[in-house]
Length: 257
Image (cartoon, rainbow, N blue to C red):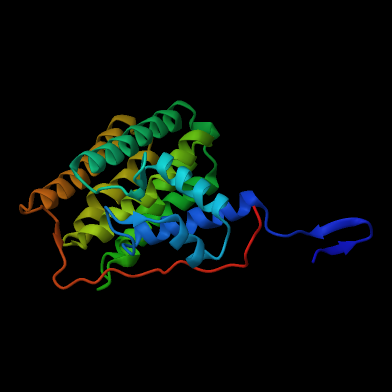
C-alpha cells in the first residue's frame, strides 16, 4: 500500500530495477565473502526462494554480475561463480594500477581543482593507516588502505574513473577472503606505500607519486601470484585454520516482475 500526500505518491513499492539491484548486491556480497565459492552453480530457483523475489530480477542480477566479472553464464549450463586465478587477479590489479595513474596525472595537471577537503581526507586516511598498522586485527588496516586508494581517485572528480575503480574494490575484498591473506608487514606497507604517497601528492612530486603508486600495486599483485603458486610471498601469508565470514542472502518481500 502506498503512502500518499495529497494526490501524489510519497512512498512507493520496490520496483523491478530496485529488486534487481537488491538481488545483485546480495549475491555479490555472498561471492565476496566466500559464501558462494568459485565454481558454485547459481541456480535461479534456489536464489528466488532465498531472496523471496520473482525470477526476472534474479535473472537480470546474474547478468549484471556477469558483466562485473563475478559470475559466468554459459548456454545450457546456467550461471556459476567465476574462478579466482592468476589471470583474473592480474587483470584487476593492472586495471586499478592504470586508473590510479590516470587519477594522479589528473591531480598534478589540475592542482587547483583538488579541494582542501579532499586533500585533508587523504592525509587523515594516511595517518589512520599508520595507527591501524599497530592493531592486532588487520581488518581496519585493509579497510583504511582501500579507502585511501579510493580517496585519491575521488579527488579527481572523474566520474567514470571513480565508479570503475570503486566497482573493482569488491574483487580485492574477494581475493583477500579467498586466500585468507594475513599481511605480515603492515607498518612497513603503511610507511612505504601510503604515507610516502600522501606526502608526494601533498608536495607536488608527480614522478615520485606515480612510482610509489605503481610499486604499491605491483607488490600486491606479486603477493597474490605467489599465493596462487603456493610459494612464499613477501609481506603476506595465508592464515592457518582461517574460516571466512559467511553472509547469507537476505530475504525481502516478494515483488511482481
